[in-house]
Length: 237
Figure (cartoon, rainbow, N blue to C red):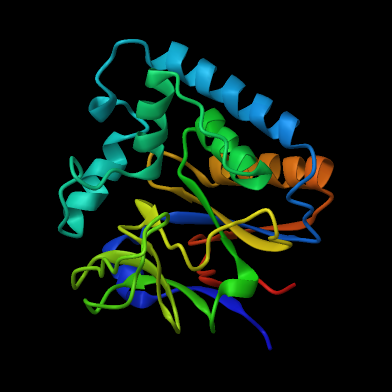
């Protein structure tokens, strides 16, 4: 069965300027080269911490567009923080929490390119993966939790046929589709809003694909959605 990644009209009407980079990675050995992944993540954290210094993270150029976007779909960005803001705040504390190699690599890429990155286990996705807006009340158990935390109506979400895969665009991913050491087939997502460009997204996507190929033995394909009328790609190939 073909599995697709689709940017739906309800999202596009809110954010016609958004760009989404997709890295489809197959044949991943997500137990391999964990030390290299941890080093890459720690190095990116240290560099980010030096770059932001004591400045106000909420007004950082990488964070401001996401705070504005979250307000646009009706949530408080001080309560629901974009993944890049969360990573920058963690970098400032100096606390490096390694998860598994693929997650560590995409977090390193996120910090190096200052763009939100995330990832899902394709084998855990039911039906197509859609970037859309919530009806409200769809099933969602956040990463690390056992309790339901459904989205509000109109919230930007990633969803499949079983419920929500990520809430508030890139705030919190689902326990159900998380990347684990057993993951062999993943879809990795990189998101951008102006003033970031197609070149920025593609550079970060190829950086991530190179890491997954070199360190984890994956075969990768990079795609760019949201530009030139392209809003769909397969994620099972």
